[in-house]
Image 1 (cartoon, rainbow, N blue to C red):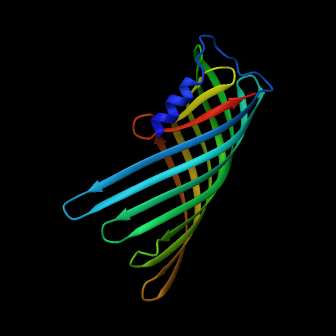
Image 2: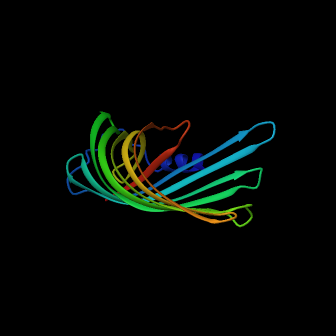
Image 3: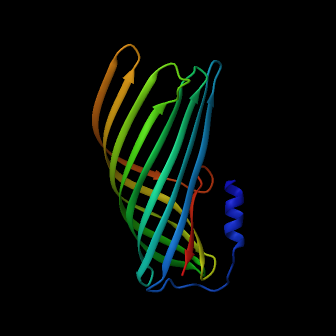
Amino acid sequence: MKKQLLVTAMAVGISLCGFAQTKGTNALSFGINSTTNKNTGANYENKYQNNSFSLGYGYFFKDNDKLGLDLTYGLNKYNTNDNVKQEQKSYGGNLSYQHYFPLVKTLFAYAGGRAGYTHSENNNLPESYSQYSSTSNQYNVGAYGGITWFLSKRFALETSLLTADIVYAKNEINETNNANVITKTETTSFNLSSQGFIKNLGFKIYILF
């Protein structure tokens, strides 16, 4: 599916001329990030499925400078062969700023910052041997950068290559095996990660008007 989406986006249009992202341009975006990891051993098999989607709007308030708003939804699943099955759903949004740097013709680099909020709920599925649930509220501020390919005056493809975030999270865990146990935690963390086309395909498709 990831390959099909990438091929479709690339086939929309290719131009040999550079496109300046001029003041007053609007940008609608759709983003997808999907990964599957499986760990196996002599007596175990763990499988992780992570999927996230975003829908956003951006406005170029001056040439090559864009303000944006993104809404996000995530669905993550974790399965083991010892009857542990978990599902996490998340909802959120972020405000962002990006500045674009022309590289070669239609290829641009970008760097920017963002601030966001995410609410997530994690539950053991009914077939699991124990009942477990947790909720989390996360607030993050960070910087990020990547590459954008403006395929034509109306379409662009963008990927994030480097992110750095400070995250504050409030978590509540409710576990009911033999007794009802509620645990509340607060954490602050700093995350620096790189992601790209090979191991972690994450990209946005823009419609410009």
